[in-house]
View 1 (cartoon, rainbow, N blue to C red):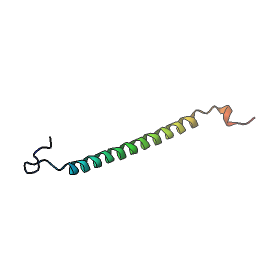
View 2 (cartoon, one colour; view 1 turned 180 degrees about the vertical axis):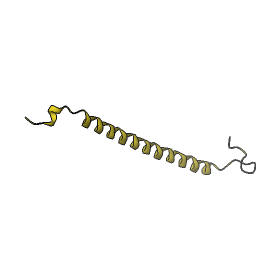
View 3 (tube, rainbow, N blue to C red; view 1 turned 180 degrees about the horizontal axis):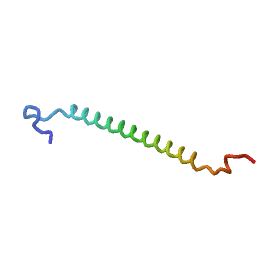
View 4 (cartoon, helix red, strand yellow; view 1 turned 120 degrees about the horizontal axis):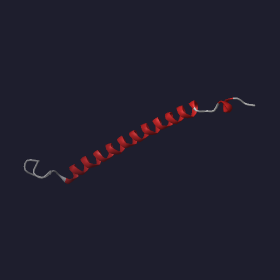
Length: 62
């Protein structure tokens, strides 16, 4: 797929390796941000559910 695209020559392996490494790093960073956003949403959802469904008997001490 990358053969002959550099004035009919192949791109240097080192150059292709750097491109690959950068893409892999960016993918990992994006996945980490997505997981953090998902975890935050889950925390907020659990907090809202736990606050709205507390039985009244738990709110008053006897």
